[in-house]
Image (tube, rainbow, N blue to C red):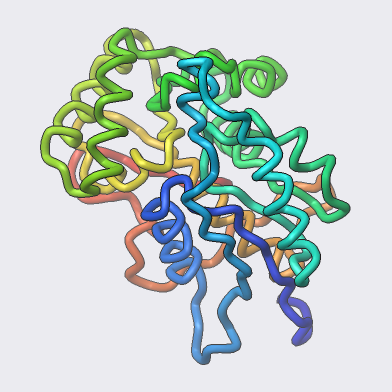
Length: 266
């Protein structure tokens, strides 16, 4: 951080799901090498599990539109001092344009940030998409990937992924969900993916334990880096963010033991 500059406060549109938001906050905490409370990142968190179902709206076509609720959350966070907004839910980024248009502060898109990280790590790659079926159906990553020369590779078993997400919402340590997710990660590699994106914050709960010969970038980790960097005034001239310093020994600071390799943004 530059010369004792006051850290900027970041607002978090949370609750999608609640445990995934807490995971994001834990990783922000782990993303700071701190000697005192004041070294940490100030967050304003709207933990709102009452946001209308993104799955019902995007997949089933029967649910209430989440956009008005998300925009109201964004405006509320801005009104109480947030200087930028983040949303640790990939699927909810279907509504990112409406959210960004509703406020005057920056909205740090985890979709754009994840695509930047993938393009830096594996230029021109076929990317295995460990995501909610709603992400595929709403084409949330397609335009961003196309701009960066990336190709998404989706799993055949979309129903299985949806079932795993529902299991994780009930129990973040669900063994069946872990096995299902690990199996899909291997299938994506077999389908030609050279790198896998964990692009669902429920699956981020399993990112440290998915086993296999797979290189993974977790969109939550990338968003954590950007959150810490924005708060510390560490944007680069191109508008991207310097990689955040990690607390020594934190789980996201290094590649995980075993054959899986987990990467963060450059």
